[in-house]
Length: 150
Image (cartoon, rainbow, N blue to C red; front, side, top):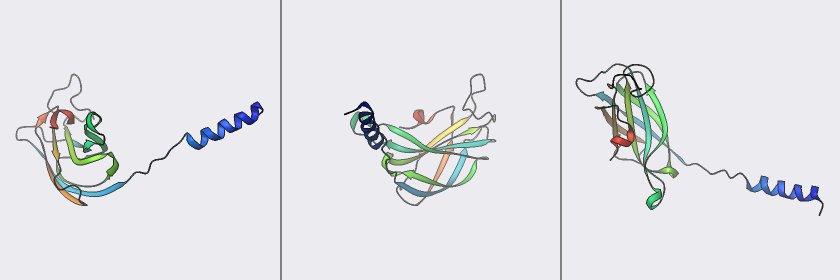
């Protein structure tokens, strides 16, 4: 077999096996709820929301809590109505995490900034369902989702 023919065989084999596309199964959920700020905390600014699977897919030691699959922002605390596409194959359970961007810099408690941006997390009960509601209380200053999730 010539080098050119061998190269063609290797190339065709590589092209046919080198790329595997997995099918993603998405589940549409309409989330309605309320984002509230704890008494005494700053309550003006955009609220950044993150949507997580509660437990990521995996067995034993390969299973881990929280797996972010979407993020959104709303202009201020208050009513929320968001449609999300939940990745069924990535884990189980639904968690909403949020924090108030009190200084408008887009970063949670940036270095050198006052540590006054409240955050909160809630596990949404009733999942899976196509319509769910939740109340998210932002009451933990500068806390990331890993710190707040049990």
